[in-house]
Image 1 (tube, rainbow, N blue to C red):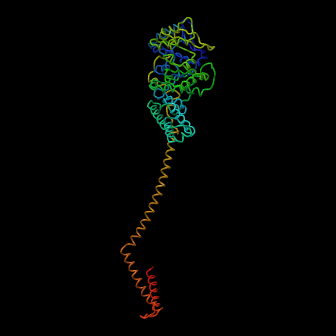
Image 2: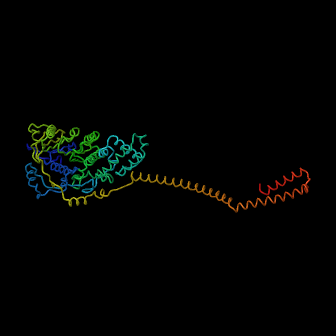
Image 3: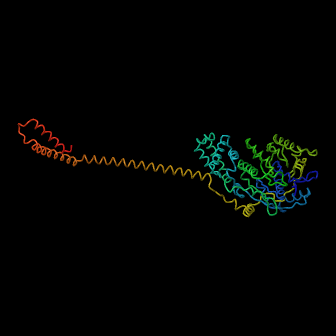
Length: 529
């Protein structure tokens, strides 16, 4: 198959999408209820039949019907059969498509996860609506984590890393620039808001392996990956950031292939305006870069939106394949959109584009597709072919059976929590706390020992003093002194008699003096002086 049949033009020419130019991107636009979803469904079917894997964001739940063949019992059957006959599509028949269901919340499909590191600070800053200063602090946290060998896998890891940076704010400010605790606090609060939106389900492991997106079934049909995005639409920033991350991952991991015979993957981005609303300049430049360069990786990106002016000119200029359903020109903005859409098509003398856009019926569109030489075909008013799969959602039971019986559930359904920044920083903090506690215990023990020794010394002195001042001690001292005084006098007298002889009253003065000195010395000796 070299092309995908889109529909039949009013002049009877077949409108086909050349697979060799399908990686030049595209746009499907139109007001609500004009047939965009059915057109999208038919194009995805064509890619799958040609062996091209697809990714589709299912915003309303309608696209899950791609997994089941349509039925003659459906209320749309008569209209579809009539349309197929009108455009001469003799090959039209009901058929299913190989489908894998995904869901960021893990409820209507297999969980889709990525790590904080793979998301990167730029997209995270967009997701959290950070200002330039806060984004700078976030980049520093990523740099420090990389330098310290810390894996940032989930929101717990990032919060722990930011807390660590807050504790080292003075050190990091000297090395990398201002890291204020106020900025870190603002980022932490933004992370709490992300948790409230369910983003904690998105960050972690096992991370999505792109090889599970880009594959075919045993019949050679491209697998259609359907992301349940109905609940995700309540968190538009999470939705748009996820899809931008996915495109960026494809760009980073796929090899250069130039212009292949058919795309490696086709990516359909419903409600495309969410990607561009209030996006800062840096993010718009990132989107433009990815759209412009991913073509050489063999990936085609198709934006689906109600109004073509939702897509910035720098991106719209890269969209070569265009299907424009009806627009309503009730307001000045609507009228501007009609004029803008008319100017983007290659002119056709037989088609008044500005008038036709407001007159198109449901299932009818203005179509201009790239030819083999890369030039767009002149715009044609076209009846779009009917889809072969079910129009509308499948039942919850049908979805459950398909999720439980595909080949990838065992790989993604159970989360893995390996050692990363959160655990390592907690362990470091615990070790530091234990070290501080041990040092304090040692210091307290030393202080207690010193205090006990001092107390023991004071107690000993007090005991000695108390003993010395007791009545018994005083009596013993007095008795000893009295005894020594009496014995001293007696000994002194005896020595005096022996040395000086018996004193007479008329003894010499020298002899009396010597006797007195001798008695004093001996008396002191016996008294212990």
